[in-house]
Image (tube, rainbow, N blue to C red; front, top):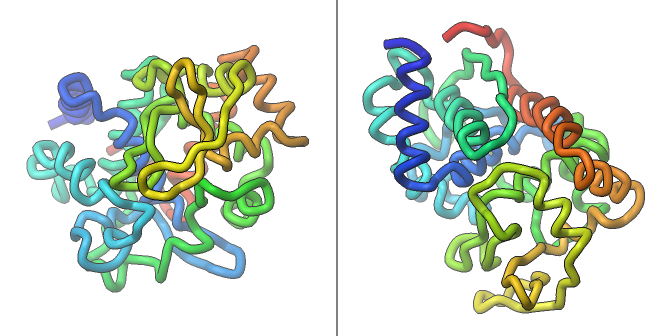
Amino acid sequence: MSLDDIKSEIKAIVAEKDCGPIFIRLSWHDAGVYSTGALTGGCPNAAMRFGTDAGEGSFGANAGLPTVAVSFLKPVSDKYCPGTISHADLWALAANVATEAMGGPAVPTRFGRKDASCPASGSVESQVGRLPDGDKGVSHLREIFHPKGFADKDIVALSGAHTVGKCHADRSGFDGKWTEDHLAFDNSYFKEMLAKEYQDETTAAGCPQKKHAASGTIMLISDLALLEAPFRQYVELYAKDQEAFFKDYVTAWVKLQENGCEGLRDAL
């Protein structure tokens, strides 16, 4: 079976299930635990596939990923993993295929990520200090992303992935979609952030967020933190220039997906 066969099967699942956003989140949370700050280590290794009882699959920030996202990919992983492609590579590929399928940029995928052999040895100790919290601001974003090798511009570009998908109160505690068309990967996240006025709201789960009354779309505190200097200049740029957003997003996203990996190759 070829790489094109695997991509075609992923595209079919995305089209049938409208699950492109959760594939992006799966790859992001698999790779995003990497850090070189006070906390070290972490890499994309599909540790969440072992379920919700231990390791990264048990993290609150990953709610829905070991169950919903991994289940959506199961027809492909059962067929191709680990003989043809590792689970970690499949998760990266699925995110990139989904991004393009939803109208976003073509994202190159390299291969050679190693799968965790068990949740205990393959997982980092906690999500704390590694994955961002939606109810915090600028200093927290920098504390999380700078040790991963990202500058302020990269933080804004990566946040643009919120142009797709929505929050689920039974998973993150937040509730609602960021943009009016949550299955279109474009620069609407930045356009809507600048154009709309948001009011304070507390979800049924007790989480603070911001809501636009007329459309029902939301922003998290961490989203609207991007309107502060110096982040705002990039929000304004990406709202005006989708190609600039796509270019910077691909650069930052590929770095995120490859952090902590060695010896990656272009061919499957």
